[in-house]
Amino acid sequence: MVHENPVIEGIGVIYKNTDINGQVKGYSSTVHIHRKKPELVWEGKIHERVVNKNTGTITIPPFSVYVLHHGYADLKTQLCKAKRNLKLIFGELRGLKSNQKEYYLNIFYVLQSYLILSADKNGKKYLRKSLRYINKFLENKDIIENDSTFKIHFYAYASQIYKRLNQTDKAIELIDEGLKLKEFYPDFHYLKYEIYKERKEMEKAIEEGIKFLQSVDRYGNKVITDYVFMKDNVLNELVNMINLEEIKEEIIQKIKEIYKKHRGLYINRLLFYLIKDKSRKEAEKIILKSAILYNSDQAYADIGLLALENNELEKAKEYFIKALDINPFNTQANKYLYEISIKENNLNKAFEYLKNYVLYSKDTKYLTNLIEVSDKLGFSEFSKKLKERLKNF
Image (cartoon, rainbow, N blue to C red; front, side, top):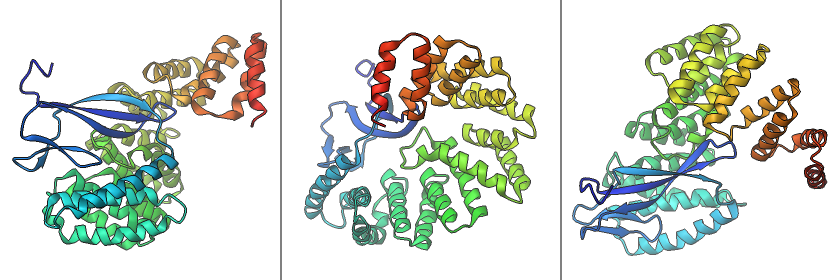
C-alpha cells in the first residue's frame, strides 16, 4: 500500500499494552517505517526519532498500525533501563548547546528516567535531582513549540514530581500551565483529582474526576499518557464518592448536562451507575446505546450486571456473552456466566467460564470452585494438578 501510494510518507507501529482483562492500559510508539529520503535522519541514542534535517522537525507518521501486546517489563528491568538511559542522555547533553531544541528534548528524557527511578527504594533523591532540570526547561520553554507532545508531557512529568515531593501547590500551578497547552488532557485532570482527594477537598476532586473521564472519552485512544489506564478506578471511586455527597442530585444533574452535550463511553457509564437504582429504564437505555455505539464489552457487562441484580438470568447471560464476543478476556463476564451456568446446572459451561476467569484474573480464591466442578465432571487429572498448585498458596 505504501509503495503504491506516494502520498503516504510512512507508517507508525503502535503497541496497545493490555492488562490481564484485555483492556488497553497504555500505548507504546516504538517503530516508524518511512520512505528513504536524504532529508530524513534518525536522531537520539535512546527514544530514537525521525527528524527532517532541513526543517529540524520531528516527523510523525500519518498512518498507524496497532498491535495488541500483553505484559509490561518488570520494575527491576525498568530501573536498569532508566539507569542505562541516563548515562546515554547525559552523554548527549554534553554535546549539545543550551540554546538547541534537542537539549530540552533530552531534559524531558532525564525527567522520564528520574520518575522511573523514584519507584526504587530511596527513590526520593531522584525526584529532588529532577528539580534542577525542571527549572532549566521552564526558563527556556519557548524553545519548544506549544503544541509539541514533548512539552505537554514535560508539564505532566514535572507535575508528578512536585506532587510526589508533597509540593502540591506547585504541582497544580504546572498542571494549569499544561492545560493551557492542551485542554482536557487526561494526565493533568487525573493528577488534580488525586491531589484534591489527598487534601480531602472532595467537591473539587469529584469535579476533576469527571473532567478526567471526559478527557478519556475525548483523547483516550488518541494520545499516549501515563494515567489514562486509571479510568476504571476513577469511575468506581467517583460513583462511591458522589453517592456519599449531600449534593449528590446536583452533581448528577451536572453530569446529565455533560451527557447531553459531550457523550462518551465513560461519562455514559458514570451516569448509568449513578441513576440505575432510581431510574432503571433510563439507565439501561443509556448503557445499551453506549454498548452498541462504542462496541464496548464493559458496557455490555454493565447491562448484564443490572439484569443479574434483578434476577433476569437469560437477559444477563445474553449481554455477558456479547461482552465476551467483543473481548474474551473480560473477567467480569466470565465470572458471572460461571455463576449463571451453576444455577442452570450446566457444569460443562460452568467449567469453561470459571477456568477462563481464574486464568485471566489470577483470582486464586476460585481455585477450590474449579477443583469442585472438574471433580464432578470427572476431570481427575486436571483436578490433581490444581490441587498440587493449590498447595503453593
